[in-house]
Amino acid sequence: MLIRDPQDIDKLEWQKMDGLLPVIVQDAFDGRVLMQAYMNREALAHSLESRSVTFWSRSRAKRWTKGETSGNTLKLVEVHADCDNDCLLVMAVPTGPTCHRNTDTCFDGKEHEVTPDLAFLARLEHLIARREIERPEDSYTTRLFEAGIKRISQKVGEEGVETALAATSGDIDELVNESADLIYHLLVLLRASGLTLADVTAVLQARHGGQ
Image 1 (cartoon, one colour):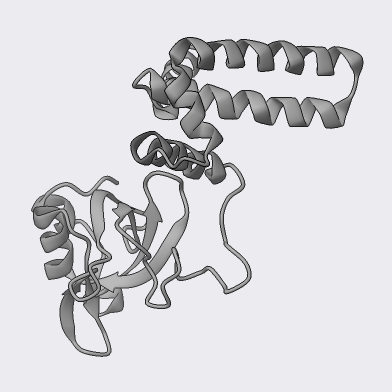
Image 2 (tube, rainbow, N blue to C red):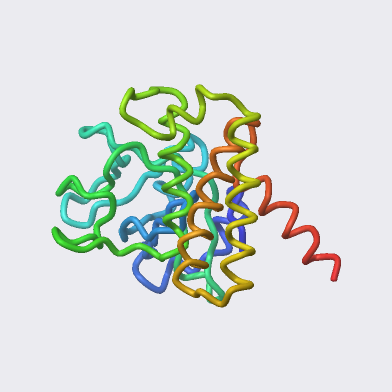
């Protein structure tokens, strides 16, 4: 159930845990699980109204908004209840590291990131966007943007042909490498054209829905 207003809040099973519900926070962009906490009615209502994710601290017995001291906030996108209405999934956009240890998520270790493999495409898209804005001199991506959309388009065409040739020859390792080059250059082309991978995904989803 999508939680939008006070009427939706009233449908939740608050009595099961003495007025608290567990909350899983997920990155709305790349799907990573960022943290787990608790909300009461007040915290959920404040989150919906302010669009800043807010929790209830059991140890301090008070409401707290993520980032109120660190500045590492969570911008609310959506709140969903599970099938039993006793657990919440919050989709949010993080500003800075979510964990107090200065890691992106509370589930990342010092030597290992807990990240779905495909989520890397979203992170790569973010990096490409930063490269377009910041234009560091030693970056290949910067050189592509400065060369212009015709050159970027040419590179996509070249990598597409090389990917097809690798598949035709049966060279699996080369196919994987050329596919990586193709996807990277396509992301750069989309950015240069004012588009994102989400725009492409939306078309695929629409096509799938029509099947």
